[in-house]
Image 1 (cartoon, helix red, strand yellow):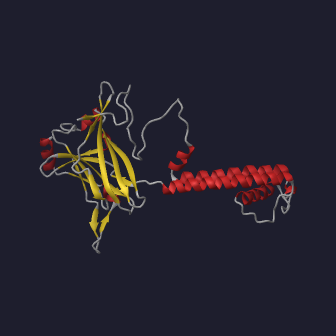
Image 2 (cartoon, rainbow, N blue to C red):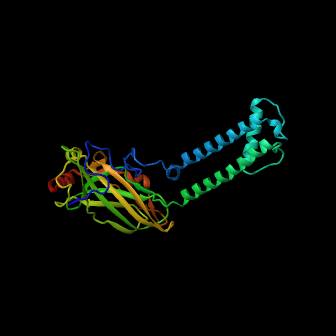
Image 3 (cartoon, rainbow, N blue to C red):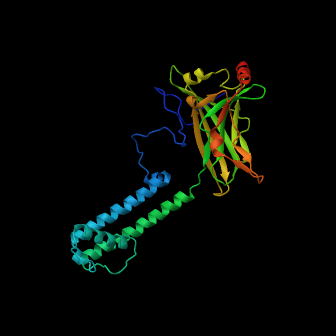
Length: 314
């Protein structure tokens, strides 16, 4: 049964890229109107290495600017600095004084010796306090922001039941050691009309759309019965209709005490046919179950007999 547009759009002048990327982001770009760049949101959402690099760059540039200001006023106005000792050493002396003032360390052997340097160092101290307050807020926001680290299998597969019923499967696992409670899965099928490039969405009923606990891996299964929008379609049809399987997950994280969400999708070229997943967990010598995240993606071919049985059912 076709669903209404879930918010991704239905009518387009040409074929679009995949709706959802593997990192959960949407392929949408804004242009014009009142939209403004949100610096805070960008700093919260960017990866950690980029965030740390940006902080270091901002700290270095700001202190470099103040160092040049002190050089322009003259190092004679900074008692305690042995100058002149060459341009580079003079710049380093001014830079180190700037860092000491900016961070409120104030070792004391160098201090402002004129009204000009006193004013500049006062302004820099204020800028330093405000900067560190903002950086602390951003760090807290990044650490306290709830997020789900769900590991998706690299591909989805078309497999089979014991009775030969074909089914669409993908597998997920929790990358963290915390427990997600009441994890729910919702799967949509996006198809594209080859003639008009219009998009249609269908719910894909699941064998099980929720689990109470999530300590192991979970294979999410949609049976391709006569009621399924995938029934009777082969690999060529998946390409013609530019099929994309869209997944939305929601669960309760007991560490953050909040709901967390995860998104992903599989395009037609990320779906393997006549495969089945290899078990991704085993029991150790101490009797504890061990989940192997590297095994989450591993599949194996169905036997020829099962493939033929699968084709007969479809």
